[in-house]
Image (cartoon, rainbow, N blue to C red; front, side, top):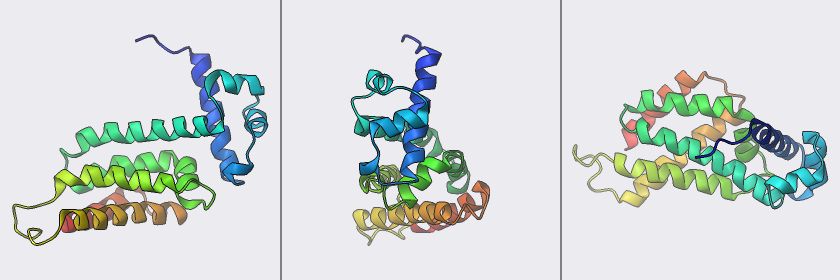
Length: 182
């Protein structure tokens, strides 16, 4: 695989930061390509070298985060709940501006929360405890809806409230609750 030029990566990162920064200030529909170019200190043509339009830019930004979370999913299922969730909450903390904009802002696309929920529900699917007998009378989809919405709700609450607990503490709390549910 060919290595991407560092200048290209730097430009793409500047554009992603610009769009997220703007989204934290105003509605996505009101953001223009010129706004993004100005914020990133680039000309409009440069944006079109990398993305079709602002929607493509946002889609690619979301895709990057889902890919990174998906990579974490691969090894997290090998750990217990509390240990597995710490890296996720550290990731949310590290990418606070993105997640606060996408989850806590009324101006963000509502589809993001739905995509995040679907991703977590898919990950939880293989984690339902059927061996102990505690979930045998429960419908799998109900369990997944409950656990997925609870987890996304905790993430939203944590971010909206300025991350009042360190990632380790909130991961331990969320992990204990998910372990009881699943």
